[in-house]
Length: 184
Image (cartoon, rainbow, N blue to C red; front, side):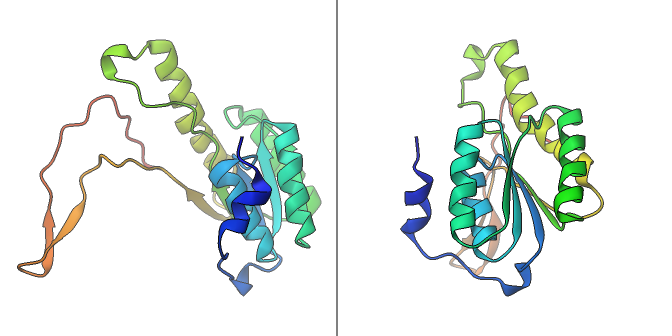
């Protein structure tokens, strides 16, 4: 398991004075990108609500955030459960007031699997953890604040610079199998 104390010691954190006293909710905040995002907001003076399913991991992230002088709260919640997210929104409003930013980073459950090996059960689990959690989080907090979501894939077509003509050109399109597409 990644040690959160070592993660942020690796390099400098950007500073944004306008984040001072903003209320930020970070889902998927108990580890990885979510934890680092929560700590970056905390370092910038935001009031951070760190959300995840692992109480012990959440406590570690909250400890680091508060050691940096931030006001931080860890909340155990399942972002695939609309009732948990409603309770989260209401609890944050009572504790900190209105939310300014939501970083919906819960998910990440699902290593790439070849389509021929994929099962319906695993597919539904990945969609639930990665897409449904994001949708429900956004729905719970919209339209009152800025929403940040993240998705990545190294296989999507990219625009590249054609150096001979110094202008963008399209790379050849590839057909991608078994990748859901969602716009929120």
